[in-house]
Image (cartoon, rainbow, N blue to C red; front, top):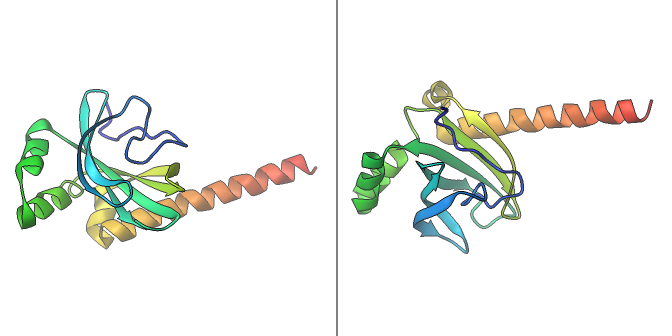
Length: 147
């Protein structure tokens, strides 16, 4: 089974499928922006890494084992920040683009890309690639329809 979370287009980024359950909210700004969720009996941390107060925002999700989740939940201050941020490194993660608090697209981000350019740049590069592909697909479909 993949360690990547499932995303539903049109779902809220903090509950990315109808069956996802909120375990704990670590931070909120008009909406949950960091926390721990459960999907299909597996735990994931999530974080809104960009655009907290904007129409569009970028989210990341990483699978964590129970022990790692407990350490994050029990930590405070700098220790919490270190453990929480560490959850998004050393593993493949899922990134999502949300518009008006609804998931519009998502893509996996490889650990190697994160190591090479950092989390935010790796996430933006992957989402941009996905948007480029979607634009190319849209253009090809328009050409087919207009033939």
